[in-house]
Image (cartoon, rainbow, N blue to C red; front, side):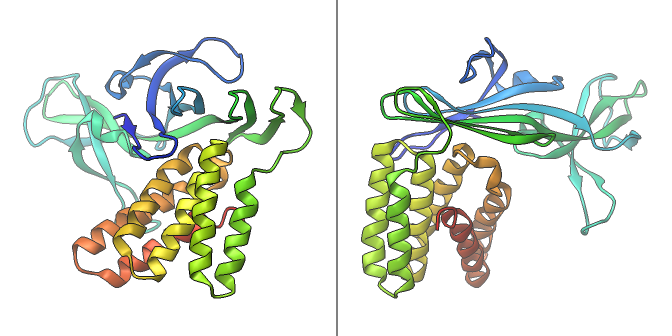
Length: 302
């Protein structure tokens, strides 16, 4: 499913799925777009996020690997066509316990899952043989751009490789050190105001940081500024506004320069917890989760 984040700032489009990329020219140029449904049966494929100008801001190679060596035989509630594909949820009763085969899923429902069971119906039509699969990121490239369109940074990372950071000036020349964004210093000023107890001044400064990040076309700056403003909303009791800003910041965090240094999955889990607890009237738990979410996203630059 492709989502567009509609804001007055820089929209982020994705995830978009692809079968490959054209050349090793940087930034990567993905080719052969497909839907998530088209990736069924593929052991690996590519995912990208794009900014408003259509530039790639994050490019991942995704692969599916076996999480369990031995397959499992599972009875089906009704007879099925032999050889047809089966997908099931992973159920873990408690931390450290063995994963169990859960309810059957459509392939489309596995898009957001880190792991799931997959297999085929056996010749009897009454049982299936499934194996637990885990989705891994083989490598990630994230890019930031100068307002003139030239690449500002490239961060290469992956589970089996050392993170490499490359930086460029506005003319496209490779440089040794990162050039700080203007919004970073503004955020520090806002944090100082907040620590001094002046939340009104902090709010003004964080809004200035947000607009500065917009002008600098920094997705990371937008994410951090939104999260800082969300924390202020939370302090002042504007819980709905805080949640909206946190969800937006969490979405932008997928494509920031140091995306893999941010623990994005727990922030998404916290957002889900807020919605669930808020809906069940457990406001205290929801606000606690929302606070963690705002702090996780907002403390990148301090």
